[in-house]
Amino acid sequence: MSALPQLERQQEARVSPIIQYLTGLLERFAALDDGAVASYIPELARSNPDHFGICIATLDGAVYEVGDTRVPFTIQSMSKPLTYGLALERLGEDIVHRRVGVEPSGDPFNEISLAPATGAPVNPMINAGAIACAGMVAALDDAPLTLLLEAYSRYAGRAVAIDDAVYLSEKATGHRNRAIAHLLGSFDLLDVAPEAAVDLYFRQCAVSVDCRDLALIASTLANGGMNPVSRERAVGERVVRGVLSVMTTCGMYDAAGDWLMSVGLPAKSGVSGGVFAVLPGRLGIGVYSPALDERGNSVRGVAVCRALSKDLALHLVRPGERTAPPVRGQHELGALRSKRVRQPAQREAIVSASAATAIFELQGELGFMAAEAISRRLTDARTQPDLVVVDLLRVARSDRGGIEFLSALGESLNGVGGALAVSGAAGDLELELPDVVLRFVELDEALEWCEDELLGRVGHLIAPTAVPLERHELFSALDPTELERLAQSLGTLEAGPGTVLVRAGDQAGEVFLVTDGALSVFAPVTGRRLSTLSAGMTFGELGYLERGPRTADVRADTDVCCTTLPYEVLDDLAVSDPRLHAKLLHGFARVVVTSLKTANAEVAHLTR
Image 1 (cartoon, rainbow, N blue to C red):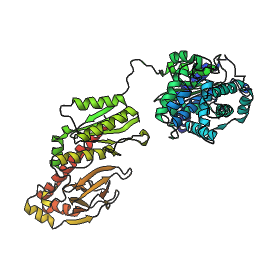
Image 2 (tube, rainbow, N blue to C red; image 1 turned 135 degrees about the vertical axis):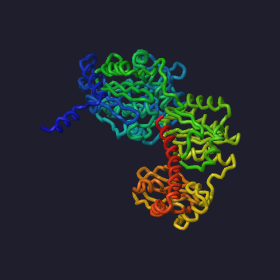
Image 3 (cartoon, rainbow, N blue to C red; image 1 turned 90 degrees about the horizontal axis):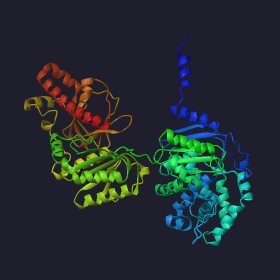
Image 4 (cartoon, rainbow, N blue to C red; image 1 turned 180 degrees about the horizontal axis):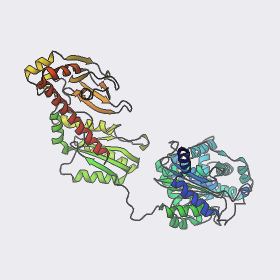
């Protein structure tokens, strides 16, 4: 019997440990049958109390779901943070917080909690505050519902719509909410008619979602406002901070204190039975189970979130926890090079003057801790560097403090004749930097800029325009007689900028000695630059040693002139002039060793 069917069965049976864990939670709490479905809204009374789903979405787009995660239900009060965020983004904190406070009420969700002097609701998570936010959104646009649905859809990563039956049910029975809207109107807290504000509120509560949507909404907030699956921005990072802050203190109503102590995550519940919770910078959680406790929160939803927080150590307050240091690596140019191959004298000059340079590789978040680490290392250095490169390739997010620090550092360095370069910044970092800060896509480009700047300071030509054959690295050990004999067999190749001199896969037949100009070597598949050569350097020597096809593309960066040394000439020399042949092979070895040293240094850097 073949082993293949058995192997296939084993592969089919393999289940993610995360799914196994969530399935265990589902089974563990399915027996929890306390509570009852909401009945004050007739349509919600039809909910099946046995429905139960759990979903987790991470910031890199992974989604884990078990149970009834695709059963539709209405978002209800879980819409409140989203509408509050929309109002904040469109109107700003000053305007919004003149009409809605941010203090915990300690009251149930439908309590009429208003500030005594102004009549403003105490926070946007209770109904009064949510209706005030809906009123602000209603005044923003001629089609406020479209505006609101588009915002919700960006959070969920799909188009969402209204459940008309639930909307009509809420509208027919929402007398208390209608009264709250008129009370807000009496305090001049609405720019639209009270009926328009409360109608938009009824509609936002009736938006149909499922448990997976809740997890993606939560992970979007955890990701600073960008949906981790669709990569579409739902809301700005500055707004997310305010939304999560209010969710932390007010999202679970009169159970907020107990929730913060036992679960420790910003969260929001709804009377339809949903709960979503956010671990900023890590993941989002969605749970759906319609049976509610006396405070209007899902019984199973609360239990699952408590278990997740305890089992997986998700509590926001984790004493003693240390994150990865913001500075992953710090170097000088002598230790970290660009892919431009330099002349020996240039390399020596760069190493000698490298104390004037500093290269920082950051990771995690560009914020205060990163700024403090860079500032301390720059000011504590014996010779304070004024050519600085900051690589953000491994930075996932930034805050205003980090961006302002980079701007200030760039201005400061510019003021003393130095410069700051930033590389590797992804588009979603939203860096707003002054013109004095140079921007590069890759660290290699920034390193080359820094090397050029340093060479200019010490009076070295960045790239010699021409190098005669007798000074070429490959021929430097030849005497005049040997060079004269060899010159008769050499060819010449001239090319303009952008010309491809060699293509990967072509059959190799000659060694190229660059005598004028500069060119770059590129990997054939990725198109990434492997090295940049200038006058006095060689390529194609490995092809002679291996006798195989070309392994990379070579393209002229400028007008280029190369002397070519055919392989058959080298083969003839092995017989006719072994001494000259040996000198040339020794020259090949020097070129290869230099390349290997550079490659080894790069590999060591990448694998740290």
